[in-house]
Length: 208
Image (cartoon, rainbow, N blue to C red; front, top):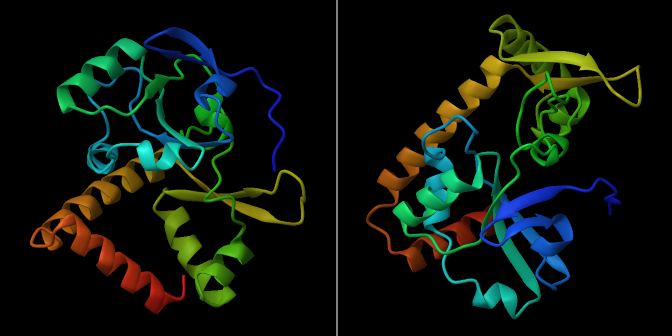
């Protein structure tokens, strides 16, 4: 559990709100970090595809959980895009706030360090089931391509954290879009229920 002391503010249909207000009186909050930059004309394609799958929230609400989307674009842009896409989930703007940066949802090392899933080199090797020598070689290649870099761990100078560069962020966004398009094409013959069943079977086989 992390104590939240910074007074984050958000803009919504009813004006300015604080982080606690987003909970809507419930004890749990799920935040969909929807990529929509302040100077963008429309939202991220991958995030939009995921948003298309957000249905009615009643089942979450009866389980004392609130779901909202948060983006850095001004609320006027979000409201217009939301209406255009026909979505009904709550969507708030964090424009001018550090919220997305503090939670590493927006990757910009000029504002805040960009951690690769908060993992060090050793942790990446262990969790990827790859030996440390191979992960070192892989990271060397990523650094040579300018998409990642090693930096000193903020709390332990003996360790190195892996950070995405701006080019790495752009590459990751492209890969997400390609993966989303490929997934949509692959699973097009399946109904929503069949997709859920397949996902459950795959998680079972993977032991997740």
